[in-house]
Image (cartoon, rainbow, N blue to C red):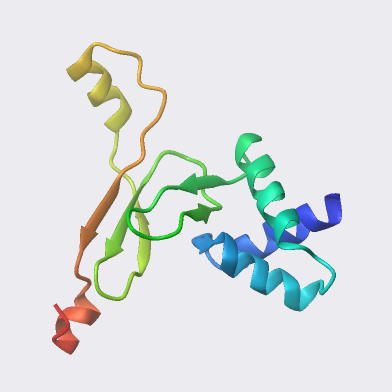
Length: 123
């Protein structure tokens, strides 16, 4: 249903766009108690296929869904798991020149320890 799809999209937008399917479901359930978990997963798949959102595969943790579909990478703190977007100018063009292949897209997750965790001595 379009109302569920719109609800899910609004939840992702309001969160800055880095949420797991489970977190999206829990938030949707607060706003629309009748929504089923399968409905959330099905809509996330359809929205990803339609290019409305981007699914980001995360190593050793659940995938996240990103509202930003333009080419970009993610900084992921290894301690607090904060996720931030960043861009590398002309990365696709550079990869194309290096490989001689047509680059259709990329997924880049850079792991680091954020300044807040460093200050707390968590790093």
